[in-house]
Length: 378
Image 1: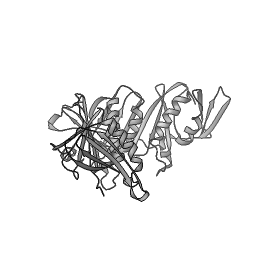
Image 2: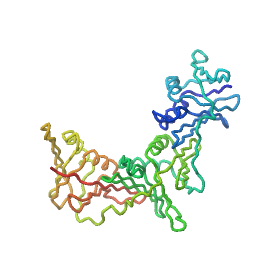
Image 3: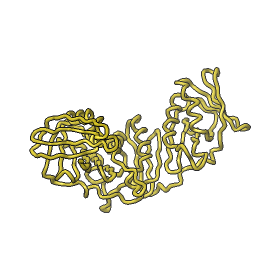
Image 4: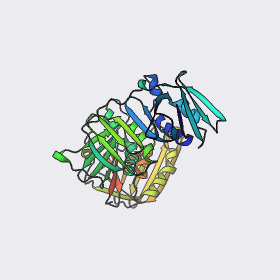
């Protein structure tokens, strides 16, 4: 049994499959990829028993349909340096090995393979789903903007994911770890919301990161189908199936303060650059950065008493109040980076309450908002 294909495309698919496979597996077969020829393509499937990723790799030719498993790491390392040369894979059913020839037969390597019937296929229910056709780049943008605010909380695993709500006036995505929150709304993706319900799901962090890697290299629409337990995302080149986080996601709208009396507008680039210059002098444990707002200006400062380091920088801003607030500098930089407008609006009630950040310009197609809890200033 023989398959001919390009090493470069196969290597790229295996690298993507490696993102699904865990370093340590409960079953040895979960360290393998399933390879099967079907309809002129080589279908490559990887799984960790919670999510399954299948990708199509174009073949030059094959003499018959076949299914077999091979260790993903060993196979990927073996073909990683073959460049774009064509390769020929030949299976020997007697010895349960396959041979990969390259360079017009001048080079080859052999590896054992395992029977495909040992590979665990998806056993999660994907029936009675709600289906959406969405531009993949829009989903990619949503995950990129708000992914930084996900939690790592073993007691509340639902907070470790990215939540999607499909309202009649747009798709809203939210993440929060209890100290920071990010919300993104795409007004071009709408839902009929039959029976007064709002379709929603919470995607775990791992499949969200895998999806980001896939969508960054693809253009066009994807089909998203989900129910209460699982989600399936696919197009003509891939299919990602994953279990969802089933607990109810907290009401993120309820924790966003409204009508704050103190409103400050500041140039995003000026503030971002000042933070990057000041942050290296902050304490390595807290990364505390202080914003001291006074009439028409803000002083950005940081210090580390233990090592006698300090830094400060003053920039202009639109501010009528005098207020001093402390933030985690790394979180604040991430928030500012994701705001697309040149000016940032900062809203708050007092230094000890949640602070809201958003663009100074109201956008018609989408909107981004972040919330951050201040830190205690010693």
